[in-house]
Image (cartoon, rainbow, N blue to C red):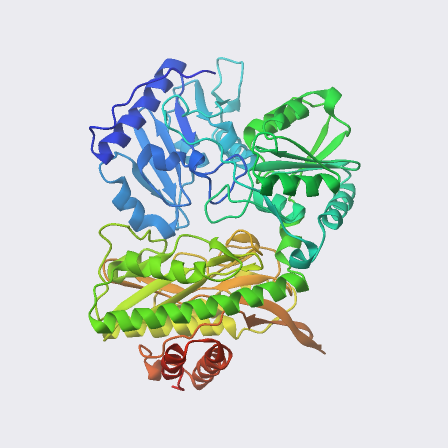
Length: 636
């Protein structure tokens, strides 16, 4: 289906009016094509959490910049669905756009499929047509919409005029004709990691994947998740900001491995990519163009296999429709990819690399916090952006650092009340010698990935700031000290971080812990520590964040985050046990603590942790920084 090109005069409009005009332009297309609703997701063809600029379609339509958000447009309604992390941000960014905020991860929530099926249309309309960009929505989402409509009494593409029906129309790159300066699919240089860094060869991983496919009764497997592809091939790029991945698909059969990627040595003549491709080809990996995947899977003559395993959570609807068109010629088995779990359990080489990364990162953090303390005390002007730039520059000097693992969150006062605050380059808040400053940051290194949050006092704090600081720290310590039976899942120990807050009738809306990749995405699964039920147990070798927090709109925010490695805690007559090793090496400020709120066990843990930080880092720090760190790590 082709879309008529519409001109939108954005250069003379206020930002909110730009978005009003863009939404109206979509409605004009809807009217011309008989479409009742359009779903625009914040994802890409691989269901990535962080998409490349080309697929930031929600941001282009309505101005919302959060990583999690989908928008639905009907003739008389435009709504954004996002979760608790972004409520405050969404209210601010949607002002004047006419877009209504629909809150998720709260009691009584109504998700997009149910809203479309039950709230968007009255029962008098015989057929409802929902349009999607099939390249930017996964098959699980489409299946959810279909199920919701069927539950509401509508039948898919029903030919009986007497009964209510619905249709889902796939319009790849739906916004292309409106978004005239839309970025192209990125093509950045590709590098490879040797076995000495990755701990396992790509040939070994591919052989394991073939064995997994056979266990599913399949003769081939299609990998569509970008971090999974990077892990299997021991290849990295920078197609997505902060995520060292390459936009691509990977097809592994019993005899061949084909990498569909939008770059090759002929089209991208940089020597790094050419050398990487030569190495991959020497290992038997065929390099084909990114878009060839659609043609290859649509033609029976191109198939050397009769059954294909695909993960429905990451395969896009457009590609899934092509596979559905091969019914009778190709058996498609939709099942969870085994790569996520195996990738999450780090091997010894990866764990050693992550320890090295956290040592280097800890040195950078202490140098930054020393600089920040001196700058604020001296009275020299410094704002949130200045601080972020300083930390980024210190990290960039570390050998093996290839950039940040996400955009540094540098937040003071009210800004810190936004869990995913975007520090503005212009007009960011000046740091004053009082209150709490929150910095959430991380680095990408050739030998690991880091993610750390430290909330520090810039001077005297209010009683409420100190109380919140202490309660969140108690939760952080509670999870770090946890000991639990083998087989325990993240949702079963989430309470260890929340209990100090819950006992004081306080809470936070985000998860307590996420998995983290090895020189890969800063967020990865399948394990997590949060409310939601997740059946994946915490296994030795998994690295997860420990980051409880509290956020008070208009006042302040507190978050303490370190990365923790799940390890074996021994076996006795009651079974096998697990615990955590703290990987992050950066002191926790004791000045805002209310001593009476903490137990002796918590104080002992904090003193031991800070003493360990000092002992490890002080010999490697400049003398003045080491002296400053000694003062910050004295026992409470």
